[in-house]
Amino acid sequence: MTDAAATHPRPNPEPSPRPERRPSAPTPRSARALAPDVARGLVLLGIALANVPFWLYGVEQGILFKPLGDTADQVTNAVVALLADNRSYPLFALLYGYGITQILLREQAAGSPWPAVRGLLVRRNLWVLAFGAVHGVLLFFGDVLGTYGLLGLLLVLLVRASGRWLAIIGWVSFGMLVLFSAVEGAASLIAEMTPGAPLTGLSAGADTYLAATGLRALEWGANVLGTAFGGFVLMLPTMVLGVWAARYRVLENPEPHRRRLAMIAGLGIPLSLLGALPAALVLLGVLEGGILLDPLFALLHGGTGPIGAVAYLALIALVVERVRAPGARPGPISRGFAALGKRSLTGYLLQSVIFILVFPAYALGLGGIVGAAEATQVAVLAWLASLVLAIALEAVDKPGPAEALLRRLVYGRRRPAA
Image 1 (cartoon, rainbow, N blue to C red):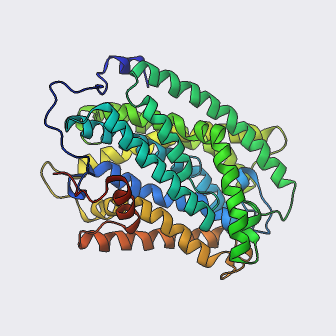
Image 2: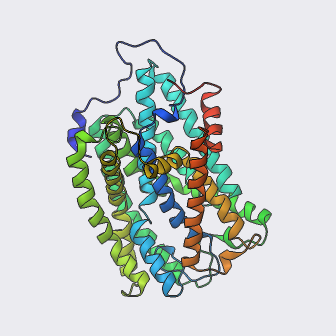
């Protein structure tokens, strides 16, 4: 985010001349941009890998709240910390901000006045928040939909801001993220000194689903309250960047931005790996952490997370643009990932459904038996299950059930726009 963005024409409060207004309606699946959906489908794997350790209970914890174990667990923790932790959620946040701006631009092109667009965006984010509440209480206390819904409401105030203001807000929130990462590192150090404590909270080791639901309600409520600081700090920098990138249509039309995207990917991915390396080496047992080093390593890990997220997305945009000839149909791999990306809400919720059937003590109870390596295998299988389901739904041109419900709640019975 640079001051050059301030010169880019931002969305107008009232398009002029204004075309004949049509009722608000979602974009049809066939007309969606490919790169954002491919990115959403891929990042769901990272989210599954980052979330699954929090379903384990009764195990010792290390840096980044990772469950400690044997050599296989150490290697698994190090790889996930290197590639996915603190990178997956910021990437999804970037795509969320990108999508909100796409809705604004689409509605403006249709002649909708700002009050109508604002009402649509507020309504959509409130429903995302509601989905998060249901998900957090019934399935997984670490739900992120509530955070996205709250941040989305904030973005309604920022989505028409100048590029200069977006840059200021983005850099300030990024600075706060770096400080917050150090605090998180100190918290994980305290967790290391409490052997046998649940990784996520009391609900992870509850004996019954009813008891876990009550505990999750408390935990999710505390999580939402913490969003006032933690969520804004962790997600806002890349969400703001998503707003800025959508104005340039970077993902719909990456060709004019190829050189900049290549530079971001070429510099950002190595920097992300270097920032995550100390924490990964601690998890491998190669480096020794401690009261001073753990917060420092966590600071490096969290501070380079958004950089890695942006670099991953730049690489995905370049690859998708390169393998897809103008006017040609995407290949089967791109179509598969995009199918899941179009149904990312369903895929995200399905992960929690699978995890809650497998890990808690009141289900199969694997959360108290397996280590990080085995749990990660379950996460990969859960992602593959969501991928297969998405491909099957794409073959019959059906939305995911969660997407269908959200669109019905936001848009009513209106059919997708042409």
